[in-house]
Length: 219
Length: 84
Image (tube, rainbow over all chains, first blue to last red; front, side, top):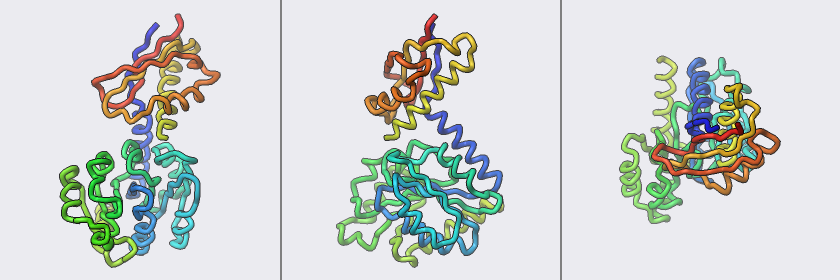
C-alpha cells in the first residue's frame, strides 16, 4: 500500500523557526542571524557592536561553534547572557537548536538577541531560525568573485556588511565592483562597508541597528 | 553535513505520517520515495549515512530508498510503501 506524503523536509525546520519567531515577537525581542565564512569577522563585529548596543538595550548572544567555546570566551566580558551551542561538526545552526537556546534565556528581560551562526558560506542559507533579520558579514579577503558563487547566502540576507575594507587595496579589491555584484544579486539588501576592528567604521551600522530595534520595540 | 539535520527531519515526517494513521502505525515500511526538486542541497550518500543510523530498529529499518526528480522545490518525502 502506497501513501502519498509530499512534505518538504524543511517544513520541520520552518515550523520550529516560526514558533521561535512567535516567541520572540511575543516578548518583543529583536533577533539577528549573523552568518559568514569562517574568519570573516562575525565575532569581532559582535564584540564592537555589543559595546554600543548594550548601552541602550538588554542584549543576549547565542553562539554557534562546531566544537570550541573560543568565540564565547571572547564575548563573556560584555556581561550579557550567552548561550553556547556546539554543533559537534554540524555546518549550521537550525531552528530546533535556537528553540532550545531560547528556553535558557529570560525573554522577559531582553530587547535583542544576536545569533552568531557557524562559519559557513553555504548551508546556513537553508535554515530559517526565526530571526528578524539575516546579517551576512563578507570580508574583502574572500575576493570579488564569491557573491555569484555563493548566491543563496547573498540573496537571502537583509543586511550585508562588507568587512575589512581597510585591506581592500592590499587584496586588490574594487569595492564598487564588489558592491555592484552584490546589488545585482540582492537589490533590497542594506549594505555597509566596515572594518570591524575599527569601531568608528561601525557607527553607521550601529546607528541603523539601534533604530531598527527601537522601531521594533515601539511597533 | 547538514544532511544529518535533513535526515532527522525526513525521519520525523515519516514517523508522524505513520503515527497519525492507526491503519499503518506499526506496519513495516517497504519503500520510501524522496522527491528531488531544484535546489535540493542534499548529497545522497551523506543523507543515507545518517538516515540509515536513525531508522535502525524502527518500522523503517530495511526500507528501500528511491529518489525521483521533481518539478517541486527542494528535497521532500514523496511517498512511503507499507506492508499490506
